[in-house]
Amino acid sequence: MSLKIALTKGRVERKVIPLLERAGIDCEPLKNKKRKLIIQTNDGKLEFILAKGRMLRHI
Image 1 (cartoon, rainbow, N blue to C red):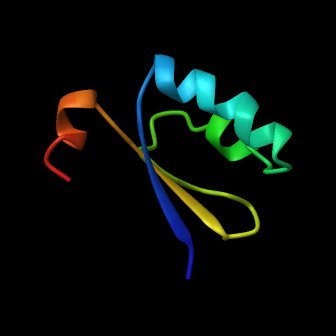
Image 2 (image 1 turned 180 degrees about the vertical axis):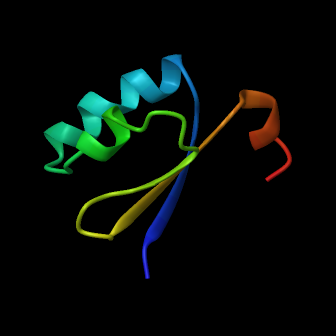
């Protein structure tokens, strides 16, 4: 089972990556996502869901 984290694409995503890295989380899959909207860390503990800001209001 993984912890799911929803992020808005763009500015928030770019600001969160350095914070996660400082916390010891490998963000390489998140940095090299290509066009994926659901990204799992290599250890499988975290799953990032990327969405437009307006979509997150409905989740």
